[in-house]
Length: 231
Image 1: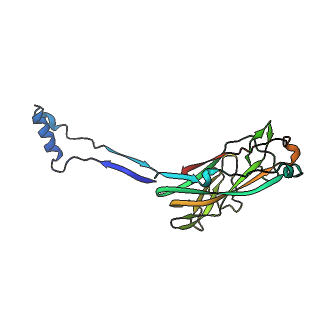
Image 2: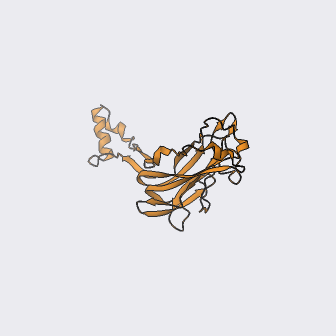
Image 3: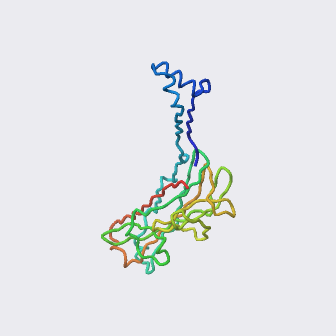
């Protein structure tokens, strides 16, 4: 956090408090003796403390496009189908060195299809006629580039109360995961002005008999929000 403004307004050094009180007494027609008892005055100290302003952005405006997926390929799958990996780049810019975290929220809660092995980590891909269309995972890079060199990924699975290195790295979809970055060997989020790291997206479709009839165009509709958190 940074101090952006701090205003301290004492009396002028050219007027000691007693002399100032006397001068006011004459001007207001009050006897100096009557004012003598009032020899105290208050000083107000005001200011604002706030984090430096930061901006968060994703390459490609955050759009992960799998293009056209062949219905024939999907319909032949008896164990589910993955159209592969895509990547977007997460960038954070701050006015000053700042410790930040990034929280993630699934905007399609309740649409995740049952995909073996990614229960906690699957974000929903939307529905079509009540059929859940699949799931995807989000995995940040092991490091982030900063203006002072690389920092290592930290993951918190309790909304930032505790941080740890996480070799799996994949973010949970239930809203508790947060990511940040630290100096090598540390588990304390580091303050920097800029962070940049890739986010890998892996999509998965369920087996064909768990999908609607593939005789028309069906759109995948995954959506998640990444939010900046000042630590």
